[in-house]
Amino acid sequence: MKRVKKSLRAAAHWVLKEDGGIMDEYVTMVGFWIFSTVVVVVAAGLIWGALSGDLQAMVSDLSNLF
Image 1 (tube, helix red, strand yellow):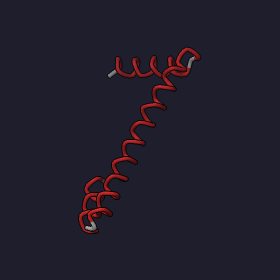
Image 2: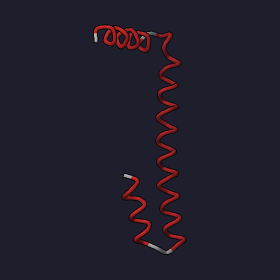
Image 3: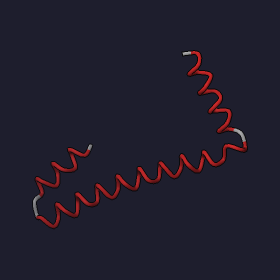
Image 4: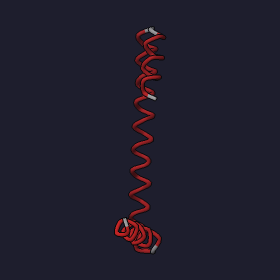
């Protein structure tokens, strides 16, 4: 447990340093990809439900997603 804390502190120190700027960009990029993937999946479910005219299927798809 002590080793994990030490590793986390070292990682946090590295990210907070000026040399850790690339890590900020990586975290932002990963967050963007996760967010955009969720948006695309929800939009696809809405479009599919609207095109099929099946409101119940659309609601069940979206409720199963979350």
